[in-house]
Image (tube, rainbow, N blue to C red):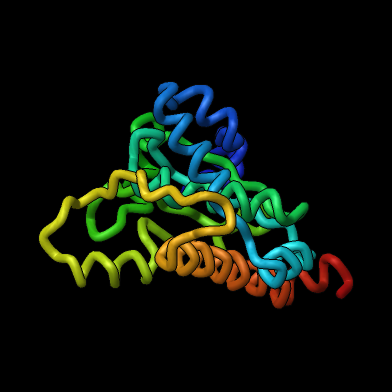
Length: 193
């Protein structure tokens, strides 16, 4: 059975509304502190600002999840950098079962997992639950906790190298999916470009 992506996307919450509904006060503080500690480079801002195709991005997340604390504020930062990106969040535990089943990672309901959709809510890609840079770090340290604490927060302008790499990888995923939309023959015909 095909998923009803338009309905799933429209039922998602904005970043702030997701946190208002699902996060406890201490979790809101962690997400907020992480967002404040992040910054895009001028090149990343220019790239994201240049996007011409509307992108809908659905993120399955959990306010309690350390990986979501680390990465969802990055998605918010990317969302804010482009008028053509709209990110919506669904809570993993409240999401429809068919969605959770469709976007499992390695057989599990991991978070965050992002589904990229074009302006017509057709899937262009999926990404998550961690980026390559994060997995490389985990492999180097095999034996630690399975889920990070999300406490690795640095002052603005002083992002640690892993955070810089993870943010860059997310920007790359948004770019890749934007170019899928931008080069689509159907969408080029639709927009006359």
